[in-house]
Length: 225
Image (cartoon, rainbow, N blue to C red; front, side, top):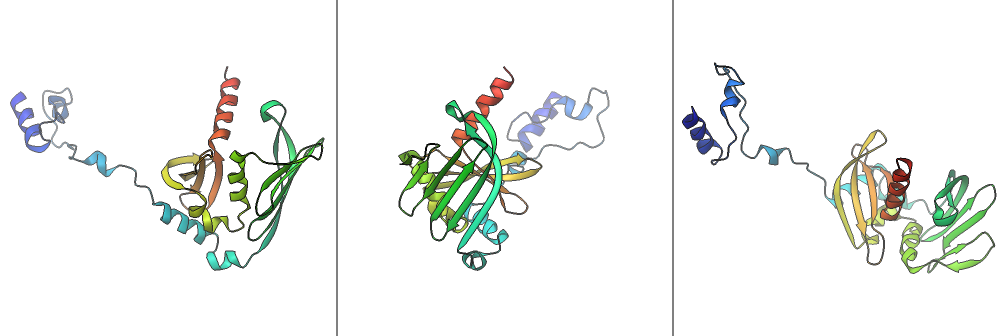
């Protein structure tokens, strides 16, 4: 019996111990009539195949209506609600409203209002700036200049590949009830960003930087501490 097992493994699996006595007998004196043997390279066949950066970005633009449709729009106003970071380190979140004004090619103004404060930030085509609760306007730190400039690009959906030094499709993760391809965008001196594209529709479901992920991890640890 051992000779038979050794011969099967040598002939079919390069000497690796893929088949044992239990493979056929399953603890019984009589072997099973038919057995599904693992095939060489089976693990490679089931390896996750991810789309390329170009394929994913092309599908995203197509999902938005195509480049010609996108370029017909030259300005937009977006209003909504979100939780705004306050307090030391921005760890205290309070409900607030956001107004976002954008004009092609790269002018933007974001206004954040809570029950007690109003903050704003923008990009004037050259520099990114912010205004605090006392009305003081200052240029943003160099580490944030790239992020705000990128977000000010009115046609960002068309220019994503040019806005990062490197883009890489890394994995698939679950966002709410949707599967999403995770694309990592990096640029020198900036915090990497994670872009989540719906595997079915191609739409961008979420954009998140590593700093935010670290903050959420800290909050999760505290809640379970």
